[in-house]
Image 1: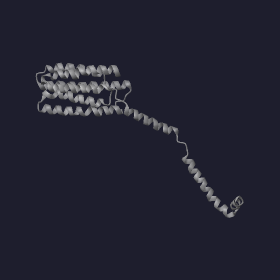
Image 2: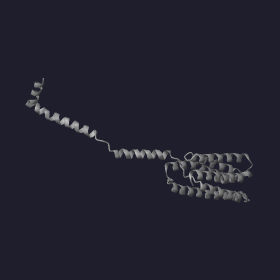
Image 3: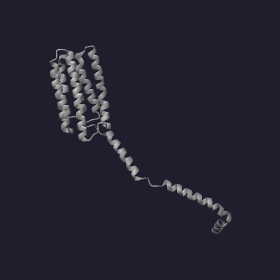
Image 4: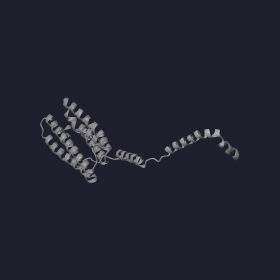
Length: 228
């Protein structure tokens, strides 16, 4: 068989067919070598780092909730509760609290910006966006309901509604923050529900106790545990 094999290979006709056969073998070998080229480790490392970073962003809580800023918001609310209680006309009472709402919002936003700058946490990070998307809708609803109550002059139920909707904002937004934040929201909601059960004359006391004292207490806890 060996002799026959060598004889066949040595024939002139077989030499003609050996050329394409060898070319085919070399082509297959070239394709195989291309498929077996080693994957660049740098490409895989970049992809892994990107995946890890995105995963950590999605799982990280928004920690730039203001502590000292919340204390300052509480102090201005206590002062506003006293000023509002001195107003004779209900429209002036409403204007007083609207001014306080704008002041508190500005203080809170500035405090968050400063705290995020110190801690290195961007205000446009994924957890911050989730916090904002959870926090904003109840506040928008509160503005719309307040305008409706003002139109029909139902001032007596504004205070409990403000506490309930603000508490809802803190609970829904706080789901993406540290644990103490949604706890504060539930306490606000409890104050609002209790205020509904009492005469409307207690509204200023509840507003001062909730937006004032609660912000001071929880703001101090946040500042102590989570810095600033």
